[in-house]
Image (cartoon, rainbow, N blue to C red):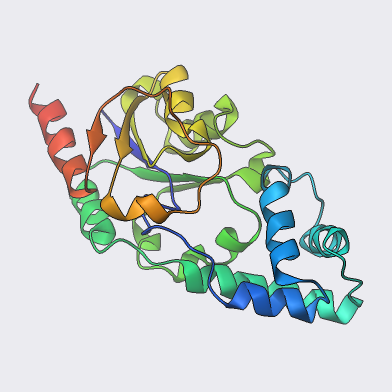
Length: 228
């Protein structure tokens, strides 16, 4: 094992739930909040794969589909407001930094691989985990979402390792664990108790590999692999 690849939302973070700022943004765009959120959910993978164009164009399409007719100024403000809204919803797991720090002490580089729109790339550098991440793979930049092989292979390219030298850790959204296994990575599911309320798209029910209850168990897995 020469590297560890982590999912972001629900893995390095606690379970994600949309906070009140999203409803405020919807109203500012002239949309019913429930209709706006439903459209965000419906279009998630299209947007996350870059299929909705720029942030401004994409948000206009979402707003129009939800019944709004926002001005350019309103859209511009909403683009920035969404970054802050998703950032406000993002709470790192308490063990995330200690685990990433522990991996660095062991000489193992770390990548984060996330299905996301434009918000995460805009605020990731503000988070305490940022200094410990050696590679960043965002679906909106790759043009594909998990479980497409391109997402995992891009992480390998940036880390300069082969897939069979990587451990992938994720909660299972987007069928990510099956996708990691398909390209040759070892994969483990994080099944932390809080994930019962996690906002997730496309689970991974077919994955039957190992399961851990806390990120801290990753260090034990790495140490066991090194000793084998």
